[in-house]
Amino acid sequence: MYKHVIVASVACVLTITALTLPAPQSPSCPFPTELETFAIDVGRTPTIVADNLRQWINWQGGNSYVQVGRHERADATSEWAFKEYMFSTDLKITDVSFAAGGQTLYVAGIRSTGNGCEDVIEQWDITFPKGSLAIQVSPAPTRGTVAPLPFTSTITGTVVIGGGTFVSAAQRIRSPFTQKTVLYSGSGLGPFAAIEADPEQRFLLALPLSGSGLYSLDLTTPSSPPLLEFDAATLPHLGAVRRIVAYEHEDLGRFYWLYETKGDYIGNGCFSFIVDSENDGVFDASLTLDAGAAFAASPFHEYAKFVSLINTTDTDFP
Amino acid sequence: MKLSIIPLPVLRWTRLLPAVLLVCLSQTAAADKLQASVDFLAAVGVPTPPGYTVQWGPTGGAAGSTNPKAGEINVNADGIRSLSPNLEGDPTDFGGILVVVLYHEYKHADGSFTNTSEAGRACDHVQQVHQVAAKNCELIQLICQEIPGADVKPICTFYSDVQDGYNNGSDGGGGASAAHAKYGCSDPYPGDIPDCPACGPDGGCAGN
Image (cartoon, rainbow over all chains, first blue to last red; front, side, top):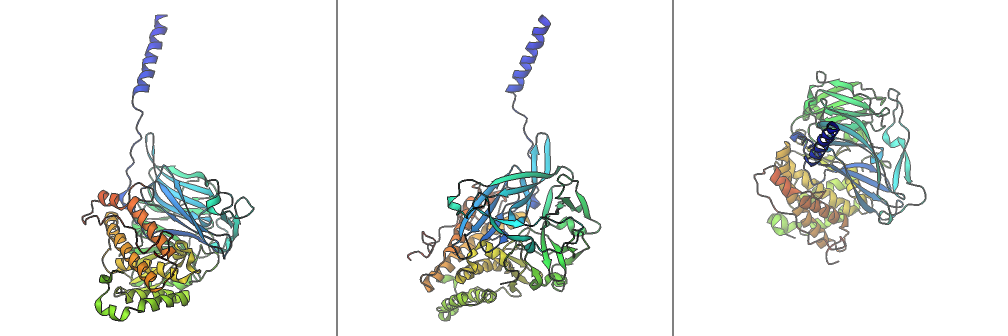
């Protein structure tokens, strides 16, 4: 009898002690200073340029939100209306990429867990409120299948979400709905200095800050392990890279441009390029060029031959 | 307009030139608007930094970028369009946004703000964005003065957007002053960005 009372009392004391002790603190995850950004100016990334929908995204390295700015109008002759949306996260963001005209965001960052920190890459599928405009995108082909499809040709048109008629932003009732899917979480590989989505959403490129290698995540099979595309021996420049952007060139086909800064001032370093000339999702070559004369003499400097991957109405320069 | 920013010899013959150039901006094809914007800036005493070429560059990323090694300032047409969708609607507005973006890149290219390390870059931007905003306001005032009834709403909206981000931070969590303190910037904090008196409450020219 006494034994039961003692056990119960001890259990009770332990419970009370547990309740009165401060909750375990989540560790504060240090954010790499190399990935902090501060640029309140023109550093917004355009994600779609169509007759009746223009969109950009904005975020800062080390913060925990992504802004999405949308200019919309009912038709090509109506007045534009602007609406800004804010999406928050528990990640300290290191990079953001997009696909499907910005309706899908890919967000890399660092998260504090109960017993440590982890590097995370999430996919955010955003459904804007009923009556908003959205981009209709053809299904992605399988990686390894030749798919010489500029993103512009996979966009079949703008549609009104929920059907019916366009509703101006001021008259919409609901907020956007965001479905988040974890594509990667773990420690040891990251933090990720740069990510960039394949415009056809077959894979996501992910570059650890260490520059140990350039990896891809299979977007058709979430939670697949990262696949090494280029190691540091092949591309020693990877350790200096902070931004990756997908491009298409009339002669070269699809390629990815690897920059040393996230900002608009490029600095005095080098550029790397990885080429997938057939756009089959399999890379054919990589090279690193000095950002001066060597770059200027290369086909990657032929800007007039670049095809816009986000412009659905005009693929030429204005 | 604060005339002190324009060299006096330039002022004598440029009194009407900005108006002429702005009218040109509204009439030329988009491809020529870039050159017209370059000419406009030169006319108000801000020439292209020596050794640099201004051109339409690749899409993706920010509206403008500066590559000092190749000596080029690139403007991203899709970036401009997403910032200011009236690009095709009112070319004068497009010219205004182009001028603002170019002026920002000029301040990288002329050697004033060239840090790439994050702390240095942040400190550079605290100063640079403040300077560019002041210039932006002067340009808006100039447009309103020279073209009565001009629709400056997109540029005023852009100005107030930058002002809000600079003064408060985009998430309300501290803007430039917080960054200035965080990075221990050596130059004094230039202060918050004030309202631009040239912009009226409806976003158009004040007094219209």
